[in-house]
Image (cartoon, rainbow, N blue to C red; front, side, top):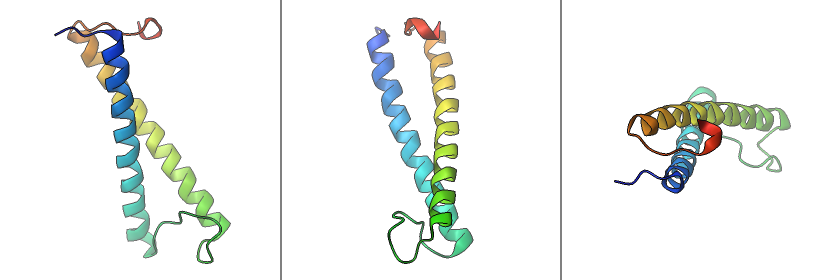
Length: 91
């Protein structure tokens, strides 16, 4: 199998989107379990205070970025071990 830079970029992007979706779902689930309320999606709704929206958004971003970095680091390492070609900035 030819492990090219283009394939690396495509798979890496797909993994990033998938991890971000899973992280958001996990934060939503934990937020609802902890507070008993649905996660605030829109700051303009009556039930969501600006503080809750900022807290929720901050947690979602921090957890999503951390998960994405971990997955990308592991994926890049595995790709190199399979003698895959990675973009120059990752060498």
